[in-house]
Amino acid sequence: MRYEASTVMNTEAQMNKTEKVRIELTAKQNPPVKYCNSKNKPPMSENFKLVPKYIPFLSQFIKEASWNCAEKTINIEIKETAEFDSYNWFGGINKRMSEAQKSSFVDLDQDSLLLIFMDECDKEVASIKFCGLQLVKHFCYLSKKHQDSLCHSISIHYTECEMIPKTRTEEDNFRRSYADENIIVDEEWQEVTV
Image: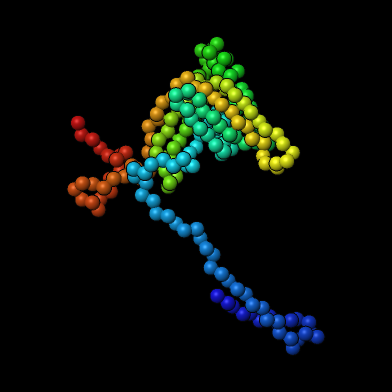
């Protein structure tokens, strides 16, 4: 689209001059909207969240993760924050675990990890909670050649894991009635007669 506008100068010397301005507006390209029907979609390897319960916001700093069920280990590459929160989390896992075993008043799951698998529509497919964490390896590569953020490679051993039931979304709470498909029933508030 092209629009032309004219402005008149206000000084006496330029009273008879007109300035023409050409304005071009281009339609802003929005990213294509993908329609997703996420029922029964498989999890995607790049769509995951690994959430440390001790400092949950660190999930956004986790670059990569690998899980070995046979050896009960999770390998993580995590970027460091400006406050060194990543190090404070994984560096204190063993200390917090030994303190938790000595006291009956400590939350034993304070250092649990939640691995959330998501499909291509970023909907949760499954979640696994890992407990009894122990830091077994740490590696941090420092180089003046690269100007990347500081990144830690860690290996964590866990003693147990469990599948967590999928969290229900609001759209999961609604279903179509079998009698009349135009009526929407909220399952959460539906009355049950016994």
